[in-house]
Length: 410
Image (cartoon, rainbow, N blue to C red):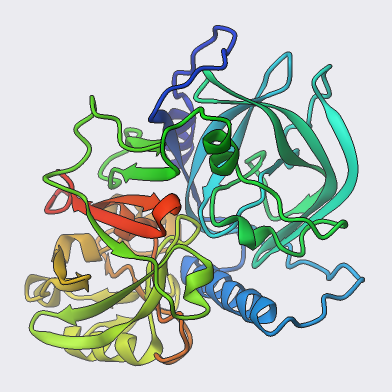
């Protein structure tokens, strides 16, 4: 069943005509869901490892810690969880690559699964690139090449990494890093920052605003879910959200401010379990992670117990019937995360080693107490219930409800 889901997810229609350089805003592309349950790590362990790695890397940059000349040995464990991929074309005779959408990193690279095809537009800069992730790594050369985004917008000299070696990215071709460009610090042998696809599209006038919109649909069946990535604003012809997008400033709290970070508080029913603090929105994290003290309060209030096989909290049917909503207060606006949104898609229980009739919660322990400057991660499961727009040009993030915010089909 899972293999059918993955195959269906990749069968996203892509225009076959030769891409042209155009000025269009926004530019939208479909997203395909990829679910990977293989590897020794559970989804919880994989997400915790990613968050710890992001925090440590950010703090290293803040303290200007020396970067070793020796490339560290990467953890070869493949990321476990839900990821979204973007079909991206590269080269004068374009080859299509499936790249993981990641706003928690900013380097774009390929060659993990399908090798890079050198064409007449390829230019090797001679700069080495190395990116370490929590559950893998990439090492290779920096190339400048034509990148066709959405099959009709051409970025003529996008910097991309071409892998000579990579670990932890089986089944995909690489990463489309769309986070803040500052996250590329220390990834090149010449020490230069690497402009992202969003940076270049805006500087070339291909999009009118430096905005990135993300719409994800929850998993409810074996049919491929809809995902849409928009660059340069929101597609006015698409009904992706309800009402207006409400914006808040990117947090000033370190280290969350190095990412797409926001301030929020979280309540379970009428009980506050996390006072206003800083955290991040991240497409590279599957679950909704909370600081350990907030997680402990949530577990106590729900009566959930830890399931050792899945690594997730589990509920009895009676407990689920009494489960209350989580309420996220962001910039004075409250976003309700209903009970149905708090559970793992039940038809995928077997894929994580759970019981077919089990009820598993998607709220996890970030692994550190609140007050450390990155106290929550609103991951994919959260983004599947709300529309998200990162306005990098104005240093703010926006949110809106969607038709799936209150969906009870899980």
